[in-house]
Every structure is written in structure tokens, then in C-alpha cells.
Length: 143
Image (cartoon, rainbow, N blue to C red; front, top):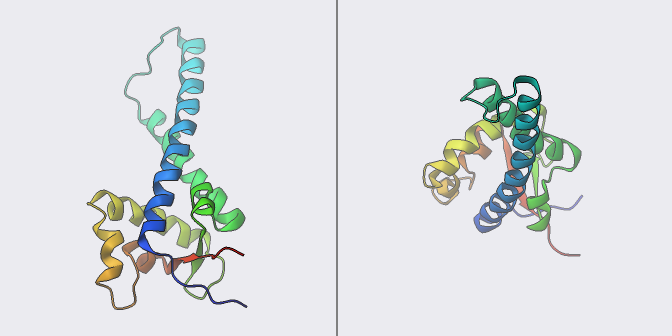
């Protein structure tokens, strides 16, 4: 079994930007479908501020990450940046670990990336989402 180095912060942020662009496209398609269905049912072209619609979009975002992390440990952006999500023992993360990682990643990235840059101050070099979920991102070198 090969031992991989922990992914550098620029790779993690790069993959997040890449995945955000993909998610933007998915959410646009999902919104188009929802507006079309809403128009078909109600005749109104505008979906009012609706908790169900927001939850629908949230499920798409969560589903994107969980699907790819479960399938291969890598989202499309992570494949492009050659990083992979593993648990701290270098195995596949559990569903619980993936959900915790998603929950903690939101404040880690939105608070000026403090939770991501935390790896520079952490003794073990882990980010907030790494510590909370007992997972980490590893760099997969070119073959």
C-alpha cells in the first residue's frame, strides 16, 4: 500500500472552485426543472421564497458530494486537482464522516477560509473539517 502526502491547501481550494462551477450548472438545471414544474402545476412563472425549494437545492448539493465521495473518494474537481478524500487511516470514509465534513466545510470556507488555513496552525496539519470528520485530503501524484 502506498503512502500519500496530505494535499496542499491550494489543491483543496482549487477543487472547491472547480466543483462550485459544476454545482452552479447543476443548480441552474435543477432550478429550470423546478420552475417548469411549478408553472405546469400552478400557472405562475415565479417560485415564491419557499423552504421546500431551498431544501431541494441543498439536497442536490449534498447529493453531489456524497455520490462522488462514496463512489471514488473524489469529486470532479478533486480528480482534476489529483486529491482524494480518505479517513485518517487512509481508508474509505463512512457516510457519517462525509456528512460531518460537509457541515464543517461550510463555515471553514465561508469565514475567510480560516478553517482551511487552520492546517498551518494545527500541530497535525489538519483543517477544521479534517479534525471534525476524522478525514483528510491526500495528493495523488501523476503516474
